[in-house]
Image (cartoon, rainbow, N blue to C red; front, side, top):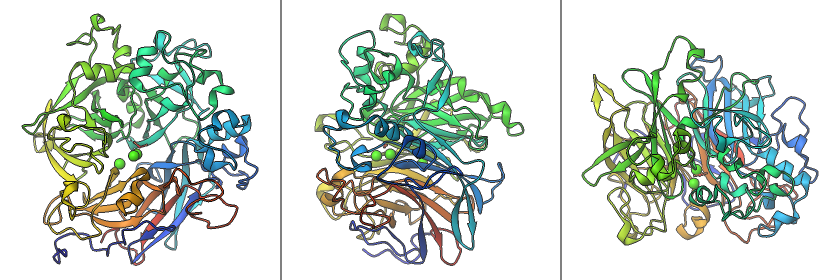
Length: 591
Ligand code: FEO
Ligand code: CA
Ligand code: CA
Ligand code: CA
């Protein structure tokens, strides 16, 4: 059925659904490639030379596989929307798509030392100064620009800092680690720092995972010891036999101050160690900070951290270590529509020495096992989780779970062999007219069950009046505009051609007649997932991250990619890139 006039606050015409080699944005908008893998980040960086890559060049250039982004206004603390910093995660390298002549299955032993070091320099994050002039965004090669890589020194803080299980030969104190790995999504704190989340760090370690004191922890975290990145051949810390504690130093949320290029990134171990997707924040009515995060793997959990102390809006430095003290909880979804937050505190309930926990460091390092013991609800791959800035309701994006059996379904994860994913809407109780994000119990409801509503076998559910191009599959990252409208990025993996739709951005209202009536706004090029939607404070610009273009088919090779987006030049590989979107008439994105 066609959307009734006025049923949605969104006014853009929808983008056609099918995957294409180029990107597309709704009519009336401009979508410009802002920065590509290999472009200069630091002043003085060399030009990108795809056939002559070096680690030292890559460490000054834009990294690979851009993911989460945050627009941080300049000057700091303002709501400026024409000048700012863009934080960008670089999640993971794909050596077979970065260098010619490699095969994914055999490259672990074929990569050269220089190539390995290029891949290590290609991940982490970037800070970019941006300016909008005459309607167009440009990267400024300014003094705040920064690259963070798999070699950048980081401080370890919170309950696991200095614990024996965090110590290595290179770091006998257990307080300093080199780099961050698998940074997928993230969030921004009320004091203007970025939280960036280590997700799939398990695939970089090599060795026999069945031996030694960490074997059970490796198993629970999914380490196989069969990394195909080749890092352990040149760097002992990725060799499990030589450095068995190194994996304990990854899988954390990292806090970074983008306004200070000399600030040391800090791994906040109070937030727990797992395959973090996002870390988004809210304030309780009494000013404490809440961080929501999900563990993106099939049958893993949704978590919430509540700080012990209150945020100080008048003294930025006073918030520096706020995230080191507080309580981490895990969600238990009840079929009666309640969600309980179960605290994960050493000595409480089953989290005792009798179950192998020595202290709070163990509870945070082995938080998955702690969550198993308190009987949290296994979810359909928690990706982004984010509170609405207008209502305080919290949206939990579950991307899919094709392994769920019919006997394992529950109300929050209601489909067996779930190929399409769902979005839950959590409602914290009201306290003095404000949402109490620290409450022990929330209510929850189903918001969207993704898939094609025209195919009853999908079991999809949206708001009334969705158009034929309005349905989506595998919701992943989300963002809210200042009016509280929800913008959803999708990641179908290699299912784009199976589902017959591209990945991209869909938007909908969360209340009124347009509630959960999604419309497609932007489409990625073939094989790319959509990441990192980020608005400027005035909602007049939207940045989106196009990750792994041409990764639609396992048979795609370096020589014959399914798209050479965004350059479309023979000899230039497809490049993950950030795209800036503005409305041609200068108006608010979405209308
Ligand atoms: Fe890196 Fe959960 O996606
Ligand atoms: Ca993701
Ligand atoms: Ca988000
Ligand atoms: Ca994903």
